[in-house]
Image (cartoon, rainbow, N blue to C red):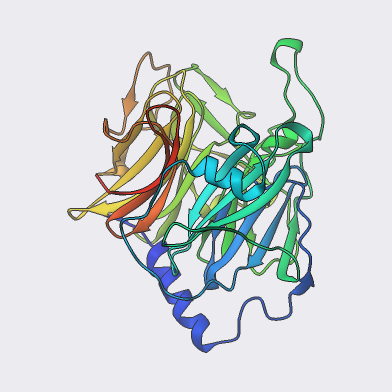
Length: 367
């Protein structure tokens, strides 16, 4: 069975419909968007930008109004961290780029930024235009909608003295729009705290998260509290599925139809890609009639993972010493990648460290 990527087609249809029908944002509140933090971001229909405010355990849907079609395949901004710092009137060591997405219509790039470090950091949204110019995106007098998570983890330091952390920082670890809902990964305050949510859009009420459990072959145990680090939605035949990546690095498959408020589900572990590694970002793309996952990692570079015969993947349910499951190759030329997103049909946009420590934004041909 061929892996069918439905997101691009659904997105294009939504954009076309948006030109002739009433806007999703009609009737939304207008005013100043108050953010405590700017974490994962993702585009939805009508170039609505979803901004995860992890500290507040909430998501803002923001009408960007950025609807003029654009293009260009040669975008490159060297020293993007320094340029963002200059725009914000600070230094590069006081800037943290938390996420990056491409507007699929205008091809403008949006960066979720923290100005400063620690609890006093200020969230900022920066736009990089097709010519490489940077500008701050005003959230004043904006049209927006807000969804708050009802079962967010505590906001405070927890854990053993040598492994303390603030679970609220992982209330939302990744988001993606799929069909008619926003998919959200992160932690909840439940005993099985690793969670997925499928929030209907436009936002109305938000139910409790779905608790997810996996078997982690590298660790040789079941896990319910490790957060999903990154995931992608796709379709196998007509069935919407998700592939989620965890630290150390299992890939796990979840049927979207099982993600219902308050449920507990067990994922299918379809690959173990090596321990001592944290997945950073992941996309799905097609080349030569085949579909691939492209995943950036903290210590294992960028992996091009084959999805051939993925629906028949063996379920990993016993300890794994090294690697097992879906085959992959490491893209050696894509070094230092922290984040990536689809730029167009043949290119990805990456945020990566160059020699000398410079952080660059550039479009690269898909491998």
